[in-house]
Length: 141
Image 1 (cartoon, rainbow, N blue to C red):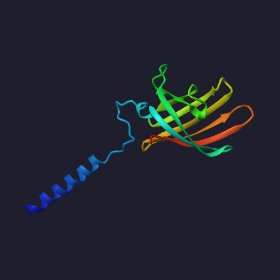
Image 2 (image 1 turned 180 degrees about the vertical axis):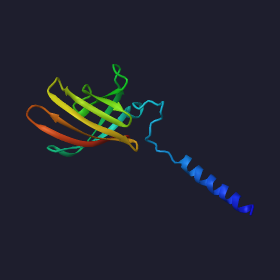
Image 3 (image 1 turned 135 degrees about the vertical axis):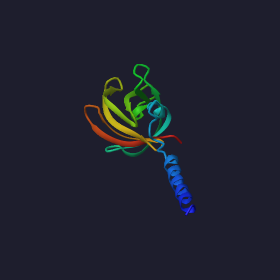
């Protein structure tokens, strides 16, 4: 009789430990900084509806000093190191608001999300002559 309660307690303890040890690496700590995981040097792999795929280049993501919830993506759309696109971070999601880059000649907008150590995204460009949609990912090699 005494053995069954001990086995039951051991079984319940094992189940409890398995739930506690399973955590999602992409969940934000309630008091953590959601922007932090987006920062750093990334490789960009993307494909456009007009220019096709195979684009692979480096971007650097920094925090926007004017808005702590925003990031700046340097070399966005392979437009050069001096070009930066703004994106607002909310949890694991990024929103690229409608904005002009490249001396106000290209309008961009899009969105993305951080998952499993990479950022998957989609965005569009419009240079007043051509509208192109892109999909891709930022990853750390």
